[in-house]
Image 1 (cartoon, helix red, strand yellow):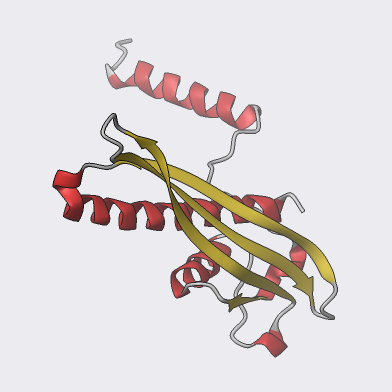
Image 2: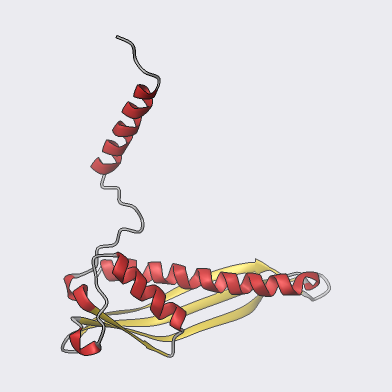
Length: 165
């Protein structure tokens, strides 16, 4: 009996998958939300459309659903007080900025049908980037990119907080 060259690889791959499954490993994107969120209305008060859309999409990708109207919802997820700020992190020997720190936060509340508060919290993100006065346009684009990344990370953190409820 000849062993094909792909058989040992296949056996190792199957054993690895069995070990991962046995230890309770789950892919990071796999979030199981509470049953109350079967049809969730995402209400944004003072937040960007980018955030509300990202949260709605994350709920859809999980076991939750997004309600088309607030009256049809089994839960209401209220997002509020979204804020970005930029602070000087370091300066060079000439007193010019060489690094900025970006802060992002958003408050959230999860309520049931009867508007009873189930859970609430604040999601925060921090990023920093080096600044060079000779690359002003590139750094402005980098900051915009980092802001989008921070919204995505905050959305993932929010989904994990909702799962732990």
